[in-house]
Image (cartoon, rainbow, N blue to C red):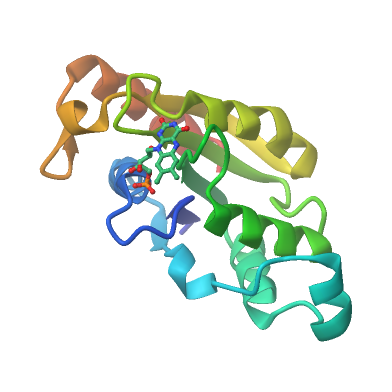
Length: 176
Ligand SMILES: Cc1cc2nc3c(=O)[nH]c(=O)nc-3n(C[C@H](O)[C@H](O)[C@H](O)COP(=O)(O)O)c2cc1C
């Protein structure tokens, strides 16, 4: 059975991006889902000095191992001031010190959402532009605007968004 690693790019306990990624994963028909939380991988703030003094934290190795063991990734990026959250960027930077192409040639369904009408498209754009150079094989991208209006009780309520996401999940699963 194929394995899919699922997470939101946020350390918020009530992360709407984790909810969106989890919802997308619930539409997989056969793959086994491994849903993780960035709070389980918190590390000191990355700096070259921190690395040379204390080395790379074990959590960075564990995170990379999860990527390497999986067959695909569903990630929904959370946007802070037009960019990645600190929690995501910190993990990303640490893991990239072990393996610059950290996404390890894995198929990736890349999502984003926010309560605003742009649906975190800025950070999604960063991921679309950069992740392929870091080993991601992006199979599809999707931004959900106005999360609170479009996502209720754990589900996408808007039919057109629902159908679009389902199509992308199917495409992603077929690529595993
Ligand atoms: C410091 C900060 C900056 C934010 N900047 C943006 C932004 O640039 N664009 C946006 O759409 N939402 C922004 N938001 C709102 C977030 O999209 C919202 O908090 C969302 O819930 C974050 O996703 P998460 O719940 O998965 O962490 C910001 C929120 C915070 C706390």
